[in-house]
Image 1 (tube, protein in one colour):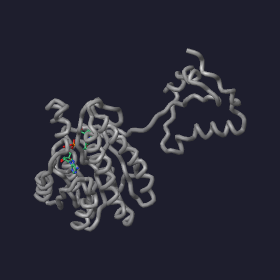
Image 2 (spheres, protein in one colour):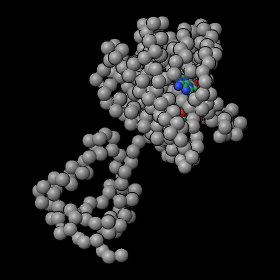
Image 3 (spheres, helix red, strand yellow):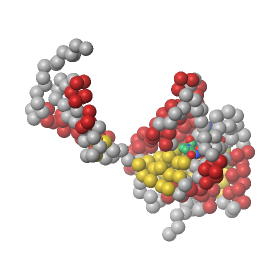
Image 4 (tube, helix red, strand yellow):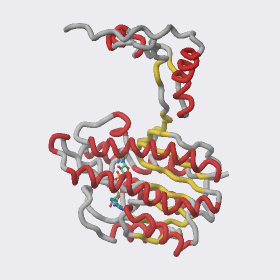
Length: 314
Ligand code: NAI
């Protein structure tokens, strides 16, 4: 059966252009009623304009779909979700997509560069999710997508603010997924790559043209469908390629109480050895090694604590 959203209401933030527009058109073409939110400001977060959202709403309506515009900043998530409630009576899908850049090397970064990025990406995603959450809880249905970035997953020169906010959204997603599980609210995170206003300053035009936002939308579409069971997951997507990401860690090295930086130095090869690895999926998984170590210590299997060694002289 085709993936459709009949009877569902989707809110897409920052849907006046780029990726958000592609999502809004995709949801509408498959039966969803869509709230097209866009502040319509510049790529660095200045100004506002209703034209971007209006143009997408017009395009959806011309294609026979249903959509309404909202021009609020994502900081005011309650107003955006209220638009969905007023126009369509519910909210089933929330795509936290709106974003800006304030790229600058860390030594030159101002408080404003930091705060604006946190406000739009982190606080904006919080605010819209917070407003949609009670409706999703009540109807025992919700699908949320948060938008991270390779810049957050891997780091990016000149983007300490953006990288911090984007990786923050992964933690937000994973915790939301846990809290939503009982009420059938699923949250996932994507790191897209697409040619948009945001990337045209850093990519050659032919790459911008080739990396179509339409190549990202199908993943968002499937993740928001009833048939998708995934929640709390992280995906990289672009140019018709989609992959899932997970944590990997080394088996690590164990030390007896009283161990020193010299001991850590001597075991650095083992600590960093990725030939034998683990894939922790939960906080509980992540604590297994530490807890088993504590048990060994309690039962006396681990070697007793040596007397604290004095720091060696330089
Ligand atoms: P874009 O600049 O084309 O679209 C972002 C939209 O968000 C704009 O239409 C803008 O007006 C709107 N917006 C900005 N601040 C807003 C606010 N406070 N309230 C409401 N709307 C606001 O950029 P693009 O590329 O489509 O980005 C979409 C998302 O994907 C962003 O979160 C971005 O950080 C993320 N992303 C994009 C990548 C890419 O390769 N294009 C790479 C990694 C992440």
